[in-house]
Amino acid sequence: MASKQPAASAALKATFRLFADGDRVLAQNVDGKVIDIGALETKGDRYIVRLDVDPPALEPSHSVEAALRAVSSQLNFDYLDGLFTSEGPVDFHGDLFALPHVEWQLDEPLPRELTDGKPPHIF
Image 1: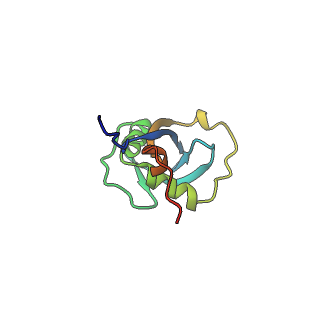
Image 2 (image 1 turned 90 degrees about the vertical axis):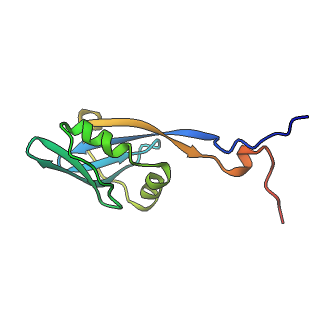
Image 3 (image 1 turned 180 degrees about the vertical axis):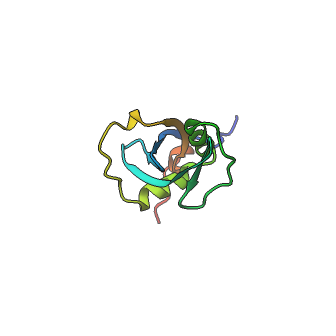
């Protein structure tokens, strides 16, 4: 009889978006909360995102969307979830989707009790 292995990699998909609003970068989570996470710098015809917290080293990109994609590829769920927990919402008025933006999904880890089929022990 085969033993049941825990599904350690089980996860939900969480959708995030990044928007370029002038010289600032806004992030939106699945709940619709919008926060300011960094600056969009322009150097000639190149663009680079500089995050306010723990910025990754990125090369300048040829377009705003490419700069947003470059930084989004460096972000993980725990980092973004921490920002959405600690930062207050931005009071943005207008159409976010009219701004240059990217959308992507990250794996949201599930609690252990949902991945191994066993309820947590109560002590």
